[in-house]
Each structure stands twice: as structure tokens, then as C-alpha cells.
Image 1 (cartoon, one colour):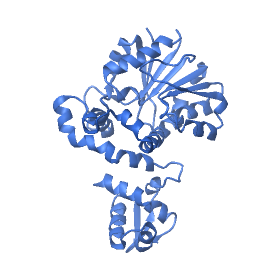
Image 2: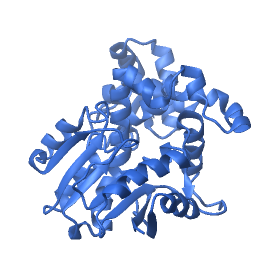
Image 3: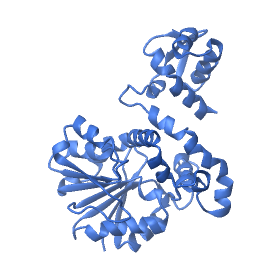
Image 4: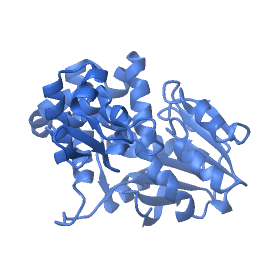
Length: 324
């Protein structure tokens, strides 16, 4: 219910319409083309979620957390909210029990194609997904450049790097590096704008390709954020094997993912386990433990050298691997 409340708020642009002022539900409804009394009920629900504050009966202001739903703000998560609450993402969840019974993804049965095949056929949805991935990557891009010694490398290849949010953060901090973003044509669609925004066009090349067929040559550090968890062990081994084939002897592979503990602790963040189920129903992948990473890397000719948390606000760890 809370998720759908957030979805309605972003679709009706209520945070944008309220802005930095106090506004009445009647005025917000008029601008949104909505029913005044129903709008008041929505705004009160948002206030109960601490995204708005009801300053007087029927008059609302945006809280700092609620401001994150404004797509015009630098730290916005509006695209992420829209993607995670999109019917395309949710329909396979209706069949979670079937996925648990069979151990197979249900997205393919619902839509007649796999997740990324579906995105390729729907450009608007693909653009929304890319924007969501950019927003979900932003916190990692802020802290990763200072959490790992990138200075000892010359070229970083971001495999499945999308619009370049993560690699841009690294290149801006480490000016001696050059970069490669490797992704499908759909995945790279917004990358030129990101690189131009940060003045990195001359230091980063865009390479279109399929990581299940090959990895780009010419890098001594290969980066995979939220890529390995999309795939089964067999497919993960395939893509890692392609990287191993072009990895220099002193090169490294960095996998940025949740690393699940061997047993669940009551204090663990639930998001990693919910993401694991999302991989089950929508993509066919999974979140992994340290032992799981040891296994898939080992089968690809790589050895895990270290596992280090990136640090707040990123929920991920750096799994550093090198050639066996």
C-alpha cells in the first residue's frame, strides 16, 4: 500500500507542485487535475509516511525525505520509485509462490520473453529502467572512488555500466584514469549525456556489446556493479570467463553486490533478501554469500582476494578478484 501511495505521488507530481512552500490540497488538486477530497486523503497518507507535513488542516509542506520524490532535485529517487512500482516489475511477483515451487523465474512466462528482452522491445520502459539504475547507483558512485585504490590502474572498464554514473564518479576523482563503458545499445542510450555533463567525453569510450559473447580488451580493471546478481551461476561464470580471457596478469575484477551472511541476522537489512526474491521472479539471478562468490569466480578462473564493504550510504561490498 505504501509503495502504491509513492507511485501515485510521483505520477501526480505532488511534491513538485507543493515545492518549497505550504500549499493546500485543493490547490494541489487543481494543478494536478485531481479530485480535491481524494487529493487531501493522498497527501495525508504521505504525511503519515513522513514525506509531507500537515501544517494546518488540509495544508501541507514537503519534508526533506519527501523532497527526494522531486525529479528535479539532484538526489531524487523518483525514477527508482516509478521503476520498482511499475506493473512490469510487479506482475511476476504475483507468481512468487510458483517461482518458489519451481525455482525458476516467472517473468518469462508472464511476458513471453526475458526481462531485458522485454526492455529492448519497450524503449520508454528501458529509459525508465536506465534512469532508475542511475539513481540507485548514485550513492555507490559517491563513496566507491575513495574506498578502493584505483590509482594503481590505467583503464577501468565498467561492464554493463549503463549511463556511466558509477564510472563518472571514479574518473572525476582519479584524473589519471581512462574508462570504457560496455553495454548494449539500449543500456548505453543515456551515457553520452552523462559523460558530457561531467566533462569526461575525451577520457571514456563507449563500446556496444554482449558480455555473454565477449568482454572489451584494453583495461586493467574490470568493474561489475549489480550485474552478476542478475544471472544464474552458469551465466555468471560465462560472463566472468570472458573477462578473465582479456584480464592482464596483474589486472583485477571488482564485483559490487550485496554479500549475504551465511545465516540471517535479525539486524540485517531486509532489502538484500527482498532483492534476492526480485532476482528469482524477474531475472533468474540471485544475491550471493562469500562462498557463492568464491565458487562462481573460481569456475571462471578467478580467485576472490578480498571482500570489503563500500561504506555508507552504499549497501554493497567490493568483491575483488584476480586471475588464478
